[in-house]
Length: 106
Image (cartoon, rainbow, N blue to C red; front, top):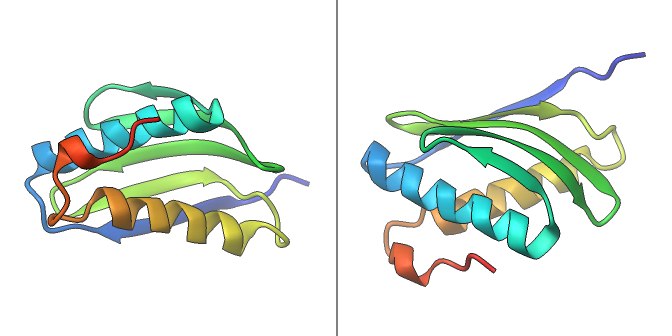
């Protein structure tokens, strides 16, 4: 049985270029901290790896007023934790009161 995709949108109030730069920093963090493979082109990217025991695989796209996430559903036991983790990271990295240079990349 193929699991359906896990999708959500996360709103932001930043300029698209600023949001893209911040998501690029998040991609660096995910790779450096958790070894999650990321292919980021500046406005969208794919990622593949594990955080704890949860496989995280999908794509993020930065749009004018939101970041769209589309990924593989890790299953009912991990779905809420995966979404909570990803939305928590987006909240931190898209916070306009935090300078891009202060965002962790390791």
